[in-house]
Length: 401
Picture 1 (cartoon, rainbow, N blue to C red):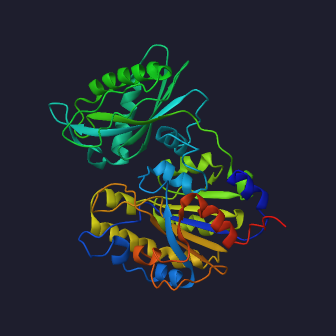
Picture 2: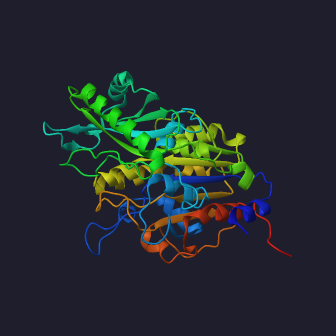
Picture 3: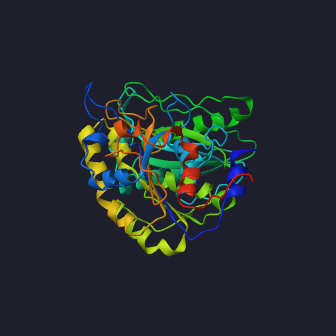
């Protein structure tokens, strides 16, 4: 029996509510052998209190040793096998800004970057150009015209934007043009199969025209393209779990992924505090809440250990407001680890905590890696977080007689 069918068959209706609090990239590493991780370094009295009363473990986003992107990392948290349900970054970004993709469209995440006079990338994110500045540059790219294809270019946030190609017989198996390092030029878009050759040619034409348009920009004078993707099709939270689900997030990509899972996008928060305001104001209207916090990940990607610690401490401060709502199950986790030591996503399992009246306390004194490795949840794949959350919320029935 497929796991999704099992969970769907066992789901039970209830008024019990679930909160999935995702601190993006929260897992880390010590900067020096024998030291503490970012999470272990941070002063987190509220998360530690949850750890003492709850149960903890380590979740593996994909499979052991596999480093996940944000898309598959979140799919696992939502209970979808990320090896079965593959959603490209472009489709996530498009959905996150509310762009209605049609079947056959190819969406691409664009990143503004800065290149030198030789065309080599000096900053992959164009200095994290502010959103109000980048939106003006995005509009200029709408001047790109290519015969036989309709092109949509929309701003997202900071250095990110979305490009959508609409035409006939467009495959989405095209390689990224971001080389993932500086000192080299953007890569050529290369088709991975015959069906995508047309798309790769369109992408190359788009890049060449865009490069001319951007040539005199002080920061965003070039671009890279990532995550070529068609619109995905997947079962919804209502179908799988019987949950009316809400997504409360700041960044568009996470809203996009949640919308593909059938969650409603609630509010327009710009900060973590505002996200909790939305959670409180919409508490009576939903069964499940996905609350996303981005900045633990971005500070890790910046290689800034101290700033990541500060972001974890910011997360800790809002925990009492969530607990005061009395969720039947509160899950605290991340979609992957982003150690400042590596300045990138990593393969390391993620500390995962469940706080619930039905939790079996495991003796963990703090929320963090060294406790999670011995916690009562053990080591498990992230796709089982939802079944654990449902069970701890009393929303799963018995299997078999």
